[in-house]
Length: 379
Length: 232
Image (cartoon, rainbow over all chains, first blue to last red):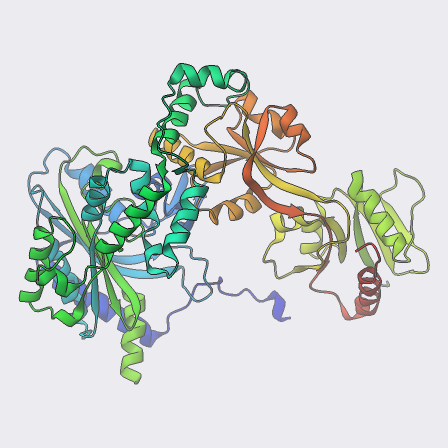
């Protein structure tokens, strides 16, 4: 008869009363701190238009999002995080009257499909977003608020991994790379942590047709391509136009780089990724890069209660999301990623709002924090 | 009334012929009164009935426990029942029905050679608030395979037949379909991607996970005979 029993969905779990009490305690402690620090508490629907999350990540997280078509034939998603919903709320309600800083905090369930047996698809998050008309600053405030949420819940043993996607992007641009190659390195930045990173990057670049055999510039123009591929271009083009196809073909050619240059970029990027906290603080960098603003941020964190042992500089950190454009950080506790955040100034415009603002935020997985707290107590 | 073990075999095409040969080679000759009849028997197996159904319907018939054993394409089974707890693959390759699930794009897409190009094109579509549309009879299988390449932002449009014409008539941009030689694709101005083979398929034997005690001996007897086949 066992086979007829309705069971809980795979990768979902029930919460017993003890864990629920603990989780609510963590949620309340964090929210209380954030509200007292000037954040306005908001709530948004669990279900949103799938486009909201798609545009936010430029598609990069759509495979992990619970998306389906509802009875009104709308494509909808269970929120994978709060940031996009909070941005939608803020900018659709304040477009004309938005004149100053806005600090918003939230808590609730989020849903993310992950292809791993031991991860849960529904977790609880608490977090905050700091939106401002000033184009710089607030990273240290937001990081310190995230840390304070941990401390309010008696989590003092944590690590903050900090990187900066903006610096990484600018550095790649300064090496003369095309946008496609910059995106290639940003997408594959974690490969640098592997032993055979050079071979793997080269093979990936070859697979993506990014490596050319010689420096000779192919001076092909639109007409040459049209002539060369006349019969193909006169046949089936599907839903794309002739011009669009030729333009992308030419772009593909111009994005290619020769192997020796590609290897030099790998070497230089590796130098940036290997910068550690001491190099940064002692100003003993072997790389020609303006890190003054970033160093100031680290110094500010160190002078406001976070010790050196809690901070790790990691320029390979990108948080896998397309919308970050500056500082990014991960919060690690008990060797587990329990939260993180960063700067995402371009998110409002990605969502279709014309707001020239600066946005910094963080989110903490309080389901995981609850498990860690209970485990630590038992030990 | 005596319980009967129900075996489902494809009703037409090469899978049907292959399945009947396969059973015959395993010492189980399937008899039916006429070609049009959709029910048959195996000699000396009184409590076994053979049913002929479309190969695409057989996975769900077995998965829902309507039938006990079935012959179908591996592609069809995985499309409908991958990770199912109510049915299973008993023999994943019974030696016929070889084919591949392939992604193909219009021949005019001279800028597209591999799946990475597709990722880029899908992002370009998204930037202008459009969706790259892929027509396939296998949306689940194709989605799972493409996700491994981080291709997420593709909209699947369902199609039952004549897939090769979909890009020409504007119904979809690209297709993913089962092919043996790829000739039909090429004749319809489509080119398979260099790395576009998502999956290699062949005929397989599937079975329900819930066989009653009354039928278990007959079930095991048949499965053992099928597993000993020389064709495999």
